[in-house]
Image (cartoon, rainbow, N blue to C red):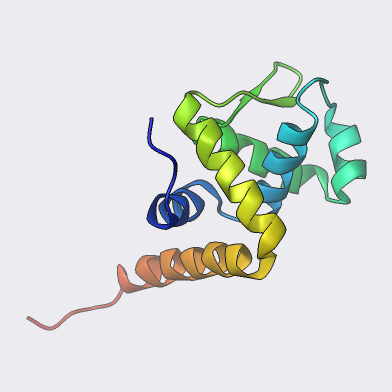
Length: 125
């Protein structure tokens, strides 16, 4: 399997993370994959709200990066080795250049909002 390149990493970030909270949650779960975290423990560890953790866990589950137990507790469990490699690459990039990764996430979110707004624009044909 080829090593992730800058384009793969950028595509992975923009398609997998709808907020920096989701990235922070994923990296926290990956660093601590040997244990199970309750919702309240994650809220305390990340200094986030229940809603933020729940939404991020759902998004990461849909992206194939975590599994969510019946009680709502997420665990790091990528659906493929490629997703694990991309997660490691993003973690390395985030350690070296957190601002660049945050900008990718924020720009992607802004692009999605603009595309949504544009879908309601009346067009003259």
